[in-house]
Image (tube, rainbow, N blue to C red; front, top):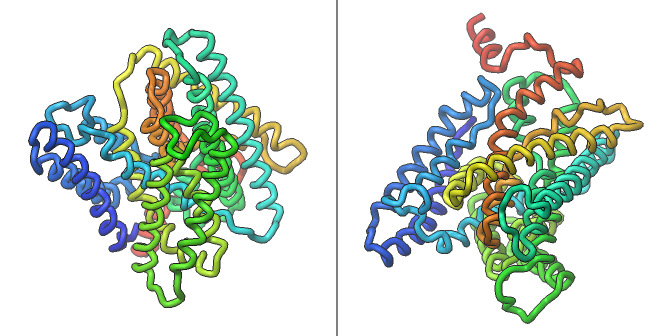
Length: 445
């Protein structure tokens, strides 16, 4: 992968701001000084360089998507695990930065909501994406709610915790990822198949629906003291849509034909900070607010230019999400945690099998197409950390842990499942050479 100059610039800037917040907290509490700031900056820079020069190669060579190592790094720097460092001692000071990273994911998916030509592949991907996302979300959410209400986990459930936890698990289960598709494309660049396009589009559609569903959770089960009166569900939803739409129109007014890419990037970062900050202030979903914001922006005259500026930034944002996901983790009882995580992974698989089978009826799609939709990545990760910074409770901590474990498992297995699916579908030969070997052989010949 080509290492561009822009992501490191803003990545270091963003982490500097988060580290400064953490340092402020640590200094006020214990006079820790700049040591935590230096630790996290050095760690993140090293992790970023390792990701670009080593991890990418490992992913292509062994068909795995990494991420667990960054979550472990965040957990080691978190207040709950390594108490001598206190880099993330006061998570409340980092919440706006975390909301910014989650908002960036929402904006990226909102900017993919562009009308395009209708083809058989597109129509089937829309059907597959909707069927898979809705079926998986509803099935997992209902199953999880019944599990929580039964008391099998042995965890006390208070108030609306069961509903929030079950709905969050359902939305995260519906969220997919194009990581496996992208990895297969990178390893086999000469592969001629429509299946990867279909699966990539279906995953993105499912992600958008999952983000919308997740945003509805924040409206239906609003937390904290209302700062704008006592709105009900429909009013919170209206505020979410108006906030994203109004900021999109405001950003549109700042765009100019003469703006270069760097200026557009800075303006984009500013509007995301503003939108995510407003969502965090109101205890709304930064994902959904920025989804609406992105939808408005991409359908303007400058939408294509803004999208091209944004699209190359997802890997650094993923790194941020992974590190903060680990930092936000709170140790839980391992027995119900692993029981819930195992049950959640099993439920996601079962409902994906059922949903993909129903969706494939009457179409040329294979009934086992769920094997190509197994990945679970950035959207589920952004949902998990958004849930953790807004909602509290033992059950919420268990749900958070289950989602993180699920992401690690699915991202590890998804590329190989997708490769096996392509082989069984006759789109890929098992003995086909990866891109690196083909290039080396061509150069040597």
